[in-house]
Length: 144
Image 1 (tube, rainbow, N blue to C red):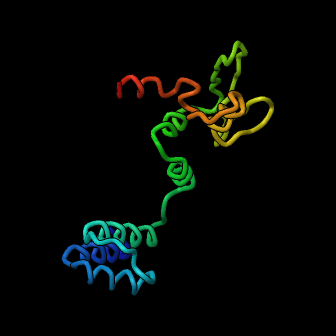
Image 2: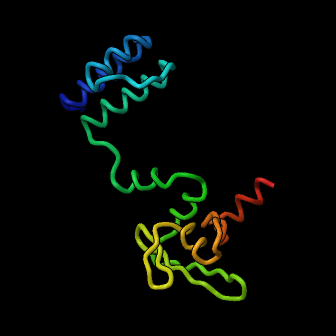
Image 3: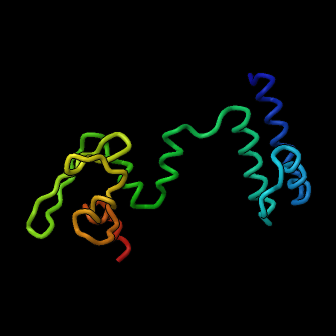
């Protein structure tokens, strides 16, 4: 059985369903200030519903925020890597090894935020890090 807070939030969110764009903007303005410039009532309704629920029950956890900030298909391949996994790549006859750590990568005695930074350090030019280390090979084959 839902508690009082859950019932109130469910009623607030359900109340958004019947509102048009101007009504949704008015609710947003009352709660959060100037509304976003969205023209889609559906998107504004979803954003508003999410904010109401996040405000009441908490938003995204730190790990989810970190994953969203990294974004992109290649990042998801890197995000699937468990700490301790070793990636190897031979570049111009020299083997290079990267160790996956929690939230970073270790290479050449240093901590790096992304595989792309390491790939650039090794090659001297911009690379997609997951592609450089062969993590995107299956995606590339599917696209071809």
